[in-house]
Image (cartoon, rainbow, N blue to C red; front, top):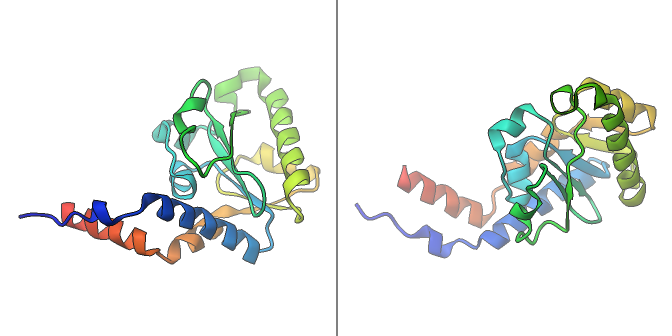
Amino acid sequence: FKPRLYEDQINLDHMCMYRLNRVREQLLQSDIGACILFDPVNVRYALDTVNMSIYNMRNLTRYCFIPVNGPVILYEYFNCEGLSSHLNLINEIRPAITWDYFSNGDQAGAQLEKWINEIKDLTNSYCKSKKLAIDVINGPAVTALNKTGIEVVDAKLIVEQARVIKSPEELKCMKAAIEVA
C-alpha cells in the first residue's frame, strides 16, 4: 500500500485564506459586522491556529475577532502570544481578556467590564452593523453586550454555512485523510 502524496499538491496558504474569506462572506450576507469565535474548532477553521483546545472548550480564555472589513485579531491565552505570530491571516495578537469565575474569582465582574469595553471599541471601529456573531458565550456577557446596544447573534450558523462549500485544497486534504485512515 502506497498512499498518494496529496500533501505535495495542497496549498495550505490558499486553503486557509479561502476559509477566512468564507467566514467573512457569510457575515456580509447576514448583515453582521463581525464575529467573535471562542470554539477552538471554529478558531482553527477560520485562522488555522490552535492552542490548548480541550481547555479552551470549557474556558473562555482564547478567541478571535473577525470583522467583515478590518484586522483579524487573535486574543491569545496568557503568555502564549508567540505561538501564532507566524500566521499571515492574523493581523494582531493581544492577550485575552477573561471574565469567567474560574479564571478570575471575585474579579470576574471587573474583567467582564474590561472585555465589554474592548468589544465596544472594536465594533465601533470596524462594524457598520450593531450585530455581532458569537459562537460560545455566557449569559452575563450577552446581557452586558445587549445593554451597550450590541445585538448578539449565533455565529454557529455563520461558520457552519462557511464550511458547506469546500475548496479544491480542502477536497485534497479530505482525500489524503481518507487514504491515511
